[in-house]
Image (cartoon, rainbow, N blue to C red):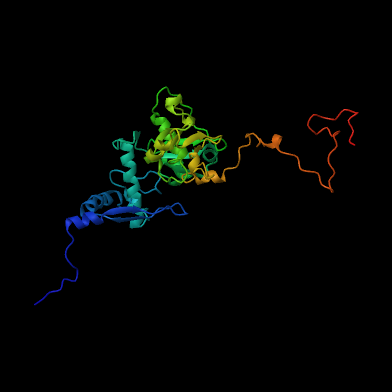
Length: 323
């Protein structure tokens, strides 16, 4: 007799390993982020016990004045916990992440301590309004930024909204310091070359104004982020970079590739497109106005006489009259 296995063959270890994963979707307009996960039995066994501890009723409740994050919650904390299981597991994920960051055992990431880096402006911080942006591009309300400061040694990089200026850490060596890298991550958000989407954690400190070999300084306002391929593209006969008055790195392609394309990458900082012009910026000048040729006279508009003081050279001598 033939027996049909409706469930099919049991997945083996290689199939489970192939299909495992955690996927983060794009941050929504309400600033929430959706996750999708397919966990191996081992991975879920780890989180199963962590949820049993930190997602229990009364644990890690953000509505409590003094949330219980260790030990056993009181009966009052349990009775006053009105969260759903999904909400408790969300708060448990946050609590476990905070514990990992506060432990100091996470090591370093590209030479920097593993910690949350947040970029904001002085104006938003003082007004308790607006948003902050992490080094990974996540948008955070200022209220959450201030709240996070009480849980771990996060890095808060504050800029002036008008000038975008950062720290001036003058160095006598080629390699940027960790503090400078943090400010670059917060200011640029990622590779500064136009159309490049590489994030800040995959970029290097690039001497944007003057190359180090040519006497360039390792100051924050002279540096910019660039991914390794784009960093190597800056050379004689290739791409060149400069820093504009808004502290943005401008990329100029070689002549044979220059089609008038944009010089600044706004992919990582779209808010820069909404920033108004600086009040103290010098007015735009017309460098070619002095060499512009005058319009030819017409019948409806007689030519200006030589006595017009606006003409080059001033008024003509009295004896010099038109015929």
